[in-house]
Amino acid sequence: MSRRAEIDYATRETRTRLTLELDGTGQARIETGIGYFDHMLEQLAFHGLLDLELKCEGDLHVDSHHSVEDVAIALGRGLDTALGERSGIRRYGQSHIPMDETLGRTVLDFSGRPEFLFQGGFARERLGTLETQMIPHFFKSVSIAARLTLHMALLYGENEHHKCEALFKSFGRALADAVTLEPRRAGVSSTKGVL
Image 1 (spheres, rainbow, N blue to C red):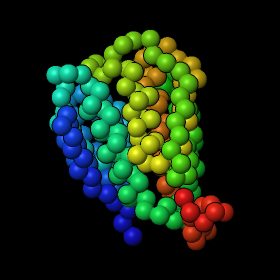
Image 2: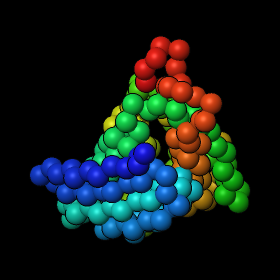
Image 3: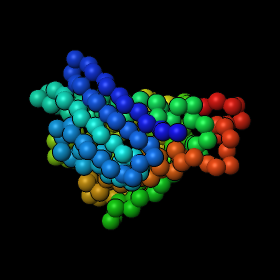
């Protein structure tokens, strides 16, 4: 069974096309026009073992907000579509990732109930052309579109690049664990019978 999704998401501000394979090897081809964001999405795909092709054409003459948000919506919808009824998945995932002096944590649940909690912050306004305020907003938008409970934290750190990268890598690792098929599970991982 292929756990794959193709998403074409267009607004007046952006056009995002995405192909996602959950059971991939971490291959990525990313074009958003925001170099640092592309780098982070490549980290997410690599550590999440996702094969991800993504292209976003957005109104970057305004700022990065619309492109980052709409990429997040497309990615979240892709995850939701590829998971289908979520039958047989482990459902939960967690990861602590150290990046030199920084430690980032992600804990998630493909519960069907979107929720996002973030602890931490950034001292700089931008990383390249990516506004740092968009980093938690990206993950919040993914969690809503993927129907995912997502708790993330920057436990400590000084370097802004390391802080952001720890979040994307820890999300990827937790995601890979949560979507793994559990051979002992015949249906969904819930006593309710649905996710």
